[in-house]
Length: 234
Image 1 (cartoon, rainbow, N blue to C red):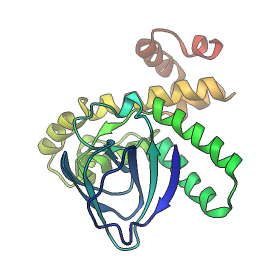
Image 2: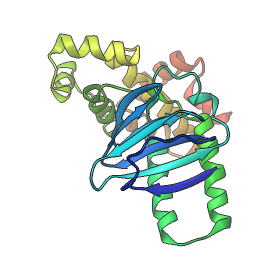
Image 3: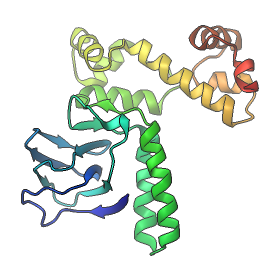
C-alpha cells in the first residue's frame, strides 16, 4: 500500500495503472470520468478506480485528496454498485491524521505502520453507496448530534426537501427510516463505549440520547440480544 497527498494540479489526462486506487476527497472536490461510469466526489467521499480502469480526474481549485494505491481491494470495496462511496466518519478522521503526518516529516517506519492500520480500517469499514448530498447532510447531523432528538420535519428542513420527499428519499438511500438509522448509530456507539471506556451506564445512556437508563437497557437488549452489563463483561 502507498499513501500520498495529491492536488492533481496537472492530472487532467486519461490514464490507467496495474494497481487499484482509492481517491478520498479531503478538501474541495473533483469530477471523475471512467470507462465504468462518471461521478463527482467531495469531502467525505471516495472513488474507487479498479486496476486497469481508464479514468480521468478533474479537480476543483485548491482541492486536496488522499490517494491510496493497493495491490488488492478489500472485500468491502469489491462488487460495488457505484465507483463512488461515502467514507465512514472514523475513517475520515484517520485520513486527516494521515494527511498531517505525511506532510510533517519523512519516517518510513511510521508510514509503514500507518499503512498497516489504514488497511485494517478499510477491511472493517462499512462503506455506504454514494449518498444523495441532501441525505448525507442529515446523516452528518445524526453523527454530530447523536444524543439529540430531531423531529422528522426538522430533518426534512436540513435536507431542503419536503417532508414526503425526505422520508421517501431517505428510505431509498439507506434502506431504513430516519428513526431506524439513528437507532443503529446510537446502539453501535453505545456498544463501543461499553467495550472501550469505563463510563457509568447512566453516562453512556445520556451520550446516546437516553435520559432513562432502564429505557436504554431495554432498547440495547432488544437490539443486540443481551444487556449492556453483559456486553461490558464480554
